[in-house]
Length: 436
Image 1 (cartoon, rainbow, N blue to C red):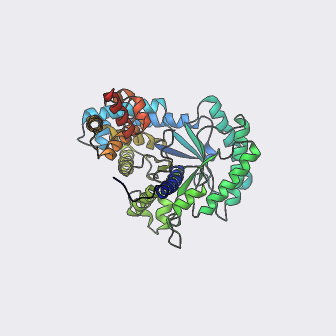
Image 2 (image 1 turned 90 degrees about the vertical axis):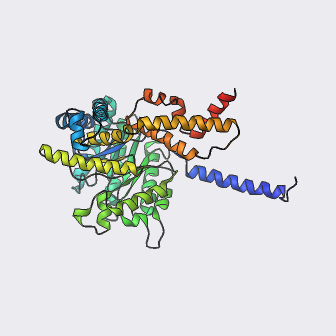
Image 3 (image 1 turned 180 degrees about the vertical axis):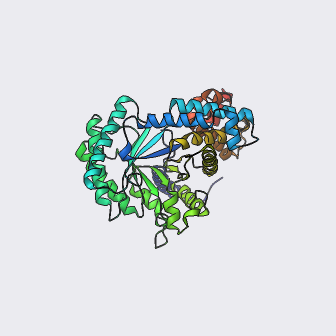
């Protein structure tokens, strides 16, 4: 059957489309190879020492053992009437994780956690904290992900922020074999306009050249903490422009709950993670950064688990509810501000995944078998998105430590298939094996 399409015209159309597709793939590379941490713990730079993350981990474990000695106590606090076997399993796995490594990501904070101090004092702190971080890497006590949060690049603090970054990076590189540690990041808070990010990128370009680092090797995080970061006065969404301004350096975008709600003129008593204004901002971030490979993080629960047992339990219930809410919105990372919050971070994640593990395992196996059989006989399997969603569930569950590699294999998947991160590729490979 002949067609009326001009072959040369069709070839040009497809050539233009290929250019557009390649441009899209460069802009939206998908997930990063490294596994996203489930939390970032912030600590004032003046307090940081080489053993800080290990000490915090020990405090978190002690706090856990004191206030949740077993699964029964934990269930009584977080889910009265819950399945005792499930909560005992959660308790056991949280304990094992805290014993192994409690702190996944740590940010040495020169902003809110440090405050405004005399220049000479901040200079000295920047040098000392960098020396201590280099020592932590030498001793093997650093968290898997580490970084520094500088002050914002506004008119008042940009000079101080740039100087702290210069002193810190110069000292760290000097004491770390003339290179930056792996998974190190610079966090820029209170980003309002793309030009603030552009200024940071230009400064990093200069520092990398002066320090002999590879161009573009210093990754950055941006913080969404103000309504202007979402929408400009001209009605333009700033988030994609802010991402473009990072020039390929952006590892993460973190939401700052309390500065953001304050910028909305919300009163202090209502500045909480579950305020509707936060839901809007989080969804906007999801839309703006979808497919870019940028890790998104929710904020922190401001009520600390400090005081008597009843006060600690109330703070834990609040944190558990907030973290579960974040997970339901597909935010798999959040902030912690106190060692006592870390155990509940893991408990909430493990409860989220383990409560549906058995059903998800059966469903994924059935999806793969059904899809492979349909492909084999030439039918169309039209629910691949659901299959990919189930696969993503297991990827996240394994990443946070909720499930083990052995439990992955019980689904009928191999670890290699899981780490391939593609439901369609699994189906294609299974189909080829069936044909063979």
